[in-house]
Length: 206
Image (tube, rainbow, N blue to C red):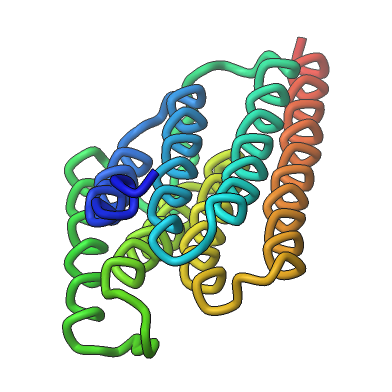
């Protein structure tokens, strides 16, 4: 797949777009679809610095994490759209502004050489910064357990892009894959507990 390695700027910029879409979406299913797409883009970007088996391992862990969250959302039968459990006022315009600010901050950090890694192409750093800033912003927009899970996995994806390029050993890749799955498993448990508590509250009111 040499042509994928020659076009790594495409997934780098696409990760910024995915970050904004994740901020805008309130549909739980679309959140998980976008998370899966983000993992594919991250794996594509990793192909420029590591072997396909390494990026494939992270991709597999990411897809399994998204699938785990999807099955949890479907099993508890919670409503498809997130309630507006806002950490602060965040209408659509505000979320777009925050997403654009994150992209500009990522580009600014790259140009200012705040993050300097010898021998690593700037596209890897840019894609990783897009994912990291996107994850931080998702954690700040709402208190929804699912969005917190997506935000944590997004941040970890950005970290994985850079760290795997620096240390591509199988032990490190296996550890990162386990962290992805561990976060998804923990957040799935939290979602089940939240859904159970909500159901009990509704029964008490009835």
